Image 1: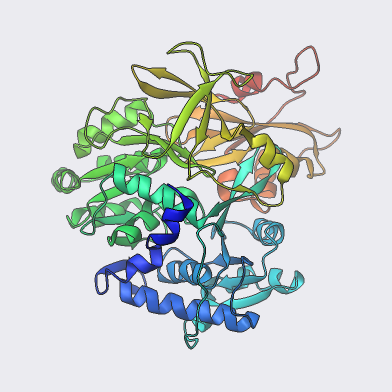
Image 2 (image 1 turned 120 degrees about the vertical axis):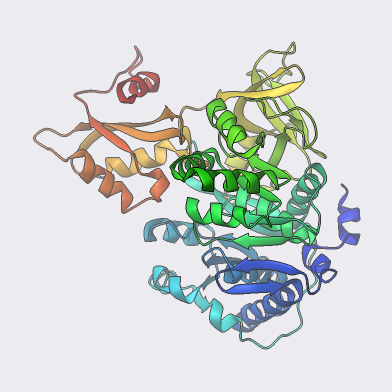
Length: 505
């Protein structure tokens, strides 16, 4: 896909004009058409430009905090239409993480839903950043909006890194369009599709795969403010949904809810599932036991795919054709994938393991304000994922991570080093090691082994509370044990494989 072609192809917002009165969003605030989405996002964009007293935000960062729903979507589109870079904030994050993201992105504005404004009311003025309420922005008078080049940055997703603190992955409008067009082609999205969004909207899975693919296609996206297994089953039972996308943990919880339901209700739930055309699992390895049980319940063999924040989706099992358990399929349209050895040479033979490297128009532009890390992330134009795979019978199978310091739990990538840094701030902690312990429901559970300072005796629960006050809920260790010393190798380095064995159930 060339940049010249992108300049002459309709943008996401321009395409919305073709869908007019079709339903775009169903949320707690009501039901809204594409016309209403264009009009409301125009007002939000006008409010941002008016507050900045300019005709173009010129890629200024706008951090926004809104629950999944109407205000979230019009905020995201409004930021884009004003020429800004959207920085989605996680509604689950404590103030310390919100403050970090706002500060690291150098946000010029914080746009917040009235019900969540108190979360950032102290952060914005302390950083000298304007705070704008979404409710007020929606009342602004429309004004002229800038014309946007697809090479401009569109969004910054924060992702955990092996160096500790999250770093911002910058995607351009062209990157987003390439990712969306690849998935729309591969999964045959159409205007009569209807998808239920239950994933967080500060990660690529929920933002791109679900919300943006739906709106690009003229489809309807139902947004739930939070995941609730009973509510999801209620929506499936309507028979109106055609697609569903989630992480393995969500499918495990839906299975548990189905198992707890009366026999008559189970039959109706299963019948409703079979009416859907596609169900997808991603963001973490799908246990074969979950795939098999879900197939028994729903009649669907979940479509497994592989992607990450920096590249969008790269590999997927076929929409039509055999889906092999444990496999993530083949490269998606417009995506190049290769496996290389430790020095960057393509692996010698089929079946040999190698690091996954990806190239294509959907690959992100850079890590925000981190030129050294951006440079290290690429090799000869290929993005180095840090994931190891092998090709078996023409299909890719993920084998693991190069770094033991990245934990994949419930669909999130978590940096063990970031959690260790926080634990070491506790006055009772002398040393610690954070690891991912394999788990059927979560993929991996975040766990920690702690060495306490002499004469100190913090309880494991108090240490978990200490982390909970400083990091997102999914980063809080589910189990903490106190040990006399951490296992180390001959060089004195902590052997995390031994720590995993200490923490395994």
